[in-house]
Structures are given as C-alpha cells and as structure tokens.
Image (cartoon, rainbow, N blue to C red; front, side, top):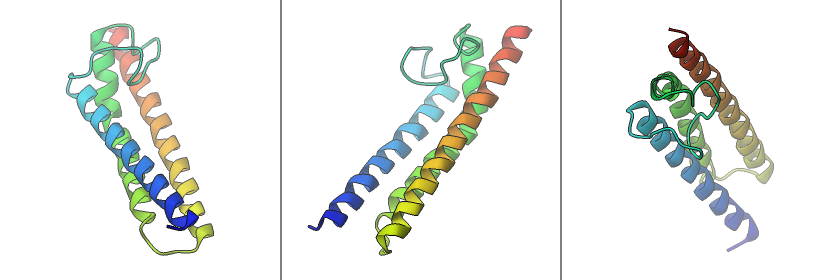
Length: 120
C-alpha cells in the first residue's frame, strides 16, 4: 500500500468511528439511556444541573448532533473516492469544520433547552 492509501484508510476509519459515536451518543442521550456523566454528552453547568435539564438538552441537540454524524460518514466515504490528494484534504478539513459547527450548535441549543427547564 502506498502512503496515500494508508492515510485515506486511517482518515476514513477515524471519521466513520466519529460518525458512529456521535450517532450513538445523540440517540442514547435523547432517549434517556445516557445518564449525566463526566465523559460523554453536553456537559455544561446548565445541562448538569439535574436529570431533567440533561434530558431536555440532549433531546433538543439530537438533530444537529446526528447531522454532524452524517457529515462525518460522508467524509469517510469520500476517502474511497478517487480524487487528487489536495481535493481530499479540502474535503476532510471542510467536513471537519462543518462537524465542529454542528456540534457547537448542538451545545448551544442544548444549553438553551437546559436553562429553560431549570428556569421553570
């Protein structure tokens, strides 16, 4: 295997793993199967305040988090498409930027939902 193929394989596997973890976390947390913890999920003071705030935040954040997972899977699939190395770098970096934006969006809307729950 050439270095480029190894690089494509590594990036593809990592992005596919990220997609799977994001999708699982979004679903499990929104369904109430992921309890408050210090490792996985949206961990801000407002979301960690109580179980209701945690659940509300993750229910509201499920959609943008799953969108980030889908983008990650698309980037993983792009690693299989023959294209110049520079184009692949652009796809991976662009995809990573979109994923980051979606995860930040999920945290923002989740935080708002959590604060609305604790304000009641």
